[in-house]
Amino acid sequence: MKNLIQDFHTGELRGPAMNQPTDAQINALLYRSLFEQLPFNLAVIDRDYNIIRANENFRDYFGDWQGKKCHEVYKGKDQHCDACKADKVFAHGETIVSDETGIDRNGRTCHYVVHTIPILDDDGKAHFLLELSRDITEIRQWQRQYDVLFDRVPCYISVVDREFKITRTNEKFRNTFGEGRGRHCYQVNKRRDKPCTSCPAARTFEDGQEHMGEQVGVTKDGQTTYYVVHTSPLSRGDGNVEHVIEIMTDVTHVKELEKQNIDAERLAAVGQTVAGLAHTIKNLLMGLEGGMYMVDSGIKRDNKDRINQGWDVLQRNFTKTTDLVRGFLSFSKGRLPEMKLLDPNQVVRDIVELYAETAARQDVELVHELDETLQPAPLDPEGIEACLTNLMSNAIDAVMMREEGPKRVVMRTLERDDELVFQVEDNGAGMDQEVKNKIFTTFFTTKGGKGTGLGLLTTRKIVQEHGGRIEMNTQTDVGSTFTIRFPRKRLQTLYQEQNIES
Image 1 (spheres, helix red, strand yellow):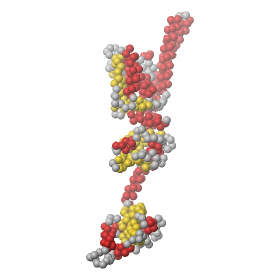
Image 2 (cartoon, rainbow, N blue to C red):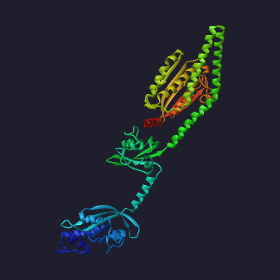
Image 3 (cartoon, helix red, strand yellow):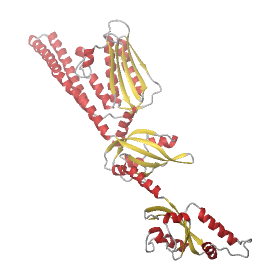
Image 4 (tube, rainbow, N blue to C red):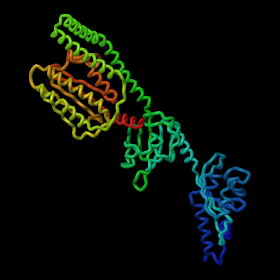
């Protein structure tokens, strides 16, 4: 082998006859031919770190090499490198691959990958090394730019594998959720001990498509945070997605504004209704005073009929006062819905059954129209029942004001644009514009002495607490339709938030 290297180095071919080359001479020819043709930087160094041979690519990349040692050419250094890979290869006779930083022929910093390969003699000893290197300077520059972009982008970014373990995160993610590599994403993002029930990453692993979802997380400081996550397949192996990148946009501020807006609407409605409170209380007090006067005068006159009549007045006004106070307290106080997975259709069936006898006695046709394809939804059982019973009661009262013709109330469920929809429709007297303007803002009632004016206000409050909205469509002498819309994403977010807090 030593002679072969010398042949290669000097360019001499020795043998019995040139027309009958030896195997060693053939190897030398192939060695020299491939040495110049391979598209890599190739150099041969001896045990004294002298470069004894290099190809044209090496010379174009590192410059003149003749009479120089490897550390002079590669690194521009006068002394042997402290962490020299050649030392290890000479000692152990095994190839080493390494990333290196050096100086190119123009004096610029360069980056290259080098394979340091031992050239072994017949005794298995390495007297020479072949170093094969290729430039990765541009790749390194792109890598640095990618790393800066990945780390500094103003979103939370993480990469997860099929076991939902985090393999990489960016700076914003680490600052918010802490170091997550090697841990499950649901442990880091949400402080959970089991996978999330609604996971966009799981869907991406399953179908290889991009997915999006609203999520509620917990920061490393224990604060609740809201974010929208987009998941995309990052790599594939054997036709399957092996890694998913999650890009999460913080929407906590938006959610806080949304909550503030809901609270502001509720408090504004409270403020508007307070203006009518004095008048309502005054009427109640007058009724109580009238009843007391009748009782007092009946006692003085020993008139039992007058006493009974006065007592009836007192009871009616006392009951109305109690209902008013309880309704107002319920309306004015804030509460988070206690969400449970419910069948919307069953909720409607129960309410229709509850009012069936009352409606039948008043000759009102009461029906339900249900979308049987509806999926369960997170709802507050007490809240949604209060909303729909208020609307049902109002609808029955409205059709009773109809002077002629059949009386009909319909309660239905729908699914539109990822919204769960409840509707209560009646063919009652309807409302004119003046009534429509007052219906959600004051202690206004169309029921005369029977109503407190708080039913629809309370209904709207509960709907808003669910992140939904209530709409009304009415026409005089035709009827009214009240529509409640609950965005399913918002319901799911409230449900997740409740589970995190619990």
